[in-house]
Length: 213
Image (cartoon, rainbow, N blue to C red; front, side, top):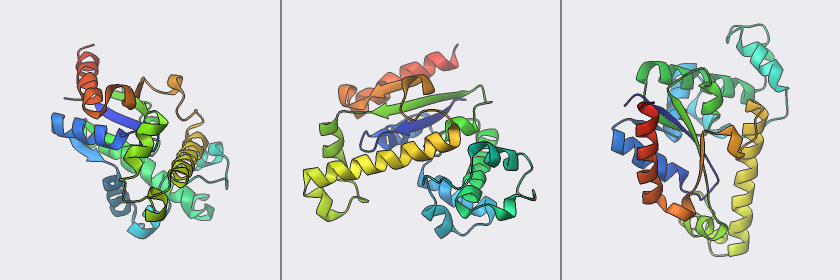
């Protein structure tokens, strides 16, 4: 196995679970919240700050300015003046590339990993979406959903939409691509059509073909 799998996902679509099962199947590392611990360790930022800024959109600087600053590294003259959200993003970007170089195969959830690894040839970029009923049923069991929202389908639906908008804003801002649009990814899958295990089974075939291409 030498493929890096990046996963974008609608909230409640099961993208994280699919990623976990793929990682277990191939015996490779899985990075979601785990990535944040590594970012904190590599960058020197405290873990609380990295967690607070995780996949949060920002309108402070234009993308091109961020990338120009990034090209000079953390010691660049503009880095010190950047907002903390930008600094955390760049540290995250650096860590993702470091993981890819060191491990060669892993699963990374969100965090514009597809953008960070766009120059790597062994990457397959996936996006998972699903029907509303499927997502609501799954989200009702998620620990980060407030208890009062879980009992109210309308509130739960609003919570899901807010999470998606947050992810969309973050991704669109930093990647200059469109979150959730089919042509942004190598493959987009409706998990409510195949189910979680069905999606995993489908992807093992796809990844096998990808590795043998």
